[in-house]
Structure formats: C-alpha cells, structure tokens
Image 1 (cartoon, rainbow, N blue to C red):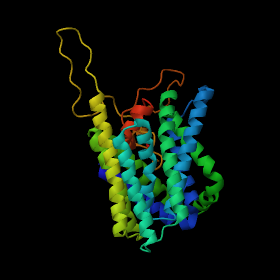
Image 2 (cartoon, rainbow, N blue to C red):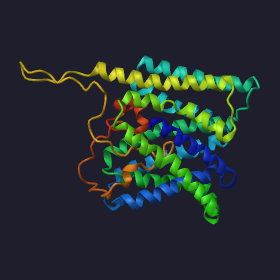
Image 3 (cartoon, rainbow, N blue to C red):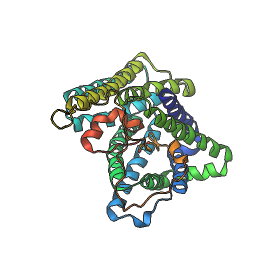
Image 4 (tube, one colour):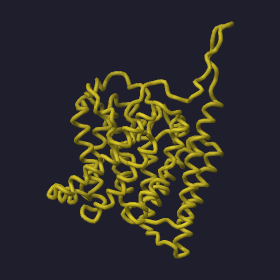
Length: 362
C-alpha cells in the first residue's frame, strides 16, 4: 500500500507536468488546491464563526505554508526533473528534524543528503545534464515551506478541533496563489478536457495516495512506514523517466540514493531515540510494569494527516466517512493524531517540536 501510495503521488505529479504548457505550473497548483478546498469545505462544514483570533491566525499561517509548498514544488518540476526536485525538497524536513532533535546522527543524515544534492551540481558542471538554477531555487523554497508546514499543521492540530482548520487552510492556499494561477484555472474551466486532467491529477496526487497511507499507517510500525516513504525520490525519478522522458545519469541516481538513505536514516535514529528515552511506568511495589509496545504501532485511531493536500496535498479516504461535520471548536482539543502519512519520517521533529503530527494532517 505504501509503495502504491508513493507511486500514485509521483505519477500524479508527472501528470500535472503535462498540464503546465496549457495552464502553467501556478494554474495547475491553484486548480488542484481549489478542487480539494471545495470538497473539504462541503464535507467538513467548518464552524468558522466560532473561531477565536488565535485560531484564525494559526489557520492562515497553515494555509500560507501549504500554498507556498505546493506552488514552489510545481514551479520547480516545471524547470528541473521530477526526481531532482523531490530529492532537493527533502532537505526541508531533514534539516528541521536535525535542528529540533539536536542529535549528531540527524546532522550526519542532513550532510549525507547535502552530498547527494551536490551531485546534481557536479552533474551539471560536467555537462551531463543542465540544471536550471531557478528550478533548484524553487525546490529549495518548497523544502522550506514543507518544514514550515510541519510546524504550522502541528499548531492547527492543537488549536482547532476537527478537520475544519485543514479545509479552510486549503482554501487560503488556493486564494493566495490565485493572482498567479487564476488565469490557468479559467482556461481549464473553458476546456473540459483540461479540467478532467486536473481532476485526475487531484485524484492521483491526493485521494488515492493518502487513502492508502492512512490504511497502511494502521498496519505498519512507524519506522517501517517512514522508511518506505523515504523511497519517494526514487519513485519520482522512475515516474519522470517513464512519463516525462527524464532519464537520470549515474550521478543523478547516486544523488537520489544518498537522499533516500538520509531520509531513512533520520527515521531510524528517531525511532531508536524514542525507545532509548522511554521510561518504565511507575507502578505500585510488587506490581509488574507493562512493557512498551514492541511493534511501534500507535494505539490511537488514525486521523486525517495534515500534510495531505499537496506534496503533501490530499483528501484522504477518511473524509468520505459519514458524520464529517466539525464539532464544537471551543471544546477540548482533538486527540493527538498518530504519526501521519508523511510524518513518520519526521518523528524526531514531531516529538521535539510539538505533540501533534504534521500532515501531510496530508
């Protein structure tokens, strides 16, 4: 299921690239976020009139991070290969994890990822492949917004019960980018075939992958989940080769391998740190302490991940369950979500920064 999710996500991004000549990268971004926002607002029906000023501030920041992450990523893959863009974007959450965890092992993982990204530059300098500087810049910006997305989604998860914060944030992300991509959306509306392809992109890059991830999250240990998600740069490279004729060189393959290894390494070090820092439960004298769950599975039911609308970008299957209306926003904060689909690889960032997960809610 995880491999199917990653494949659907990256092939959806490749399909989106085919729409760039007609709609522009910003137009495709606004179209996808707009479709997702309409679906979420109809299903969730957020009680925004009850939100306090602090809640609105958190949701607006979340929406800005979401829009920036999606728009920058699509602008990047409009200029550089898909696999290259995904590998560079991974630097964002990896650096955030290292900063928040302050573990030497995470710093080594970041250096490993930087070495991998540096190979793309070597490839370009040797004339093997041309690397568009603006595309690289957009990929780096997408990584920064991805890191901000992790922090903003955790804050919304703490302050806004239900999924209303996510629904409004997606709409804000679409509105913020509308000045740059609105004309592309109008073009899609005027051409049903383009609109259908845009809906297909939303399906492949949102609904399918995050529904599969949500199901897998209930069955797999978090460390296994995170390692499998770390394969995304490799899958993105394959999708780019098959659908966009972006054949990687030996340097490109080595770069992606290093970034995948760095991402998987961060997941493993975070899991080991959690196990080493766990303390036995205090029990009465003579009583036996309960052992920790050896599987690493979260015990609470899975909830909608927060990073899903875009790379992060998606409407998960949970939104299609009955009784989706948002509860009282002034009530107690929602239960801490378990490791969300794309956050399993950022366990250290989550556990150090806040008690909630990022996604990718997705």
